[in-house]
Image 1 (spheres, rainbow, N blue to C red):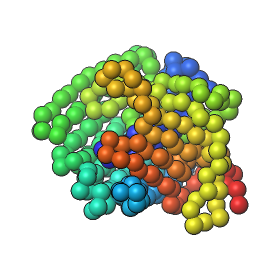
Image 2: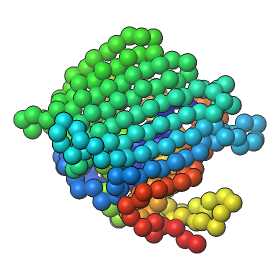
Image 3: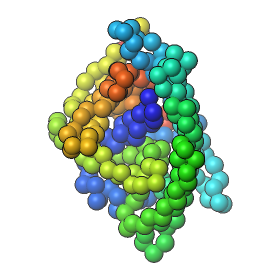
Image 4: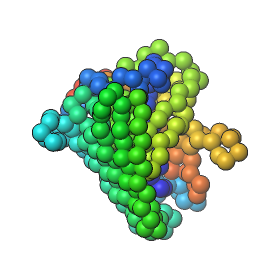
Length: 277
């Protein structure tokens, strides 16, 4: 599955950026957190379609807590993904991500340790802010053991996968136009990347074997191949409330299709007003 779930969570959080130009979003680094609190935990199950049968592919969890980082109050979010034994035959994934960011959502440190497909990679990002610039030092240990260290500087804001997820959850999702497109930027590995999302509209999603139905905002995550042709990689459903939680993810992978469903959410800051009984 190769970090696709992590990328999806990042994309899901981008729902709020549709109300802003990218340059405006990046220019407003500090932002008030209105979406989550210390103690929040989100849990997911991953499923893979094998010969027309859906089988459990793995699990993921994301937890957030208050910490003291270099003498300052901060948040720490840990994202852990694990494939099940059946899925390991196709692609083994054992990923642990940690992001530390200030109480006003400004990134401070990021680390990803990933065992994917039999190879182990490490990505670390250190952030500094000086003279109106964001300074990044990116350390990347490749799967073959090579180490790459890169320094970048920009006048805009830069986020890693996890801090971007948490930061964008606080924006308001209103005035969306179906089919609207937006680019977004984040640091990954030893480089900065730009991807694209498309807003698909509002739909209702009923959780199997329950009476719970979510009112959701639906988005598509797009990627371009080497020839510049765009392909829809993921369709995802985000709660239409102040929590902005991804509750369903439909994935188109190279080796088949997969889905992820929210199974449990605890320690939420806001009421789940998107649930319709």
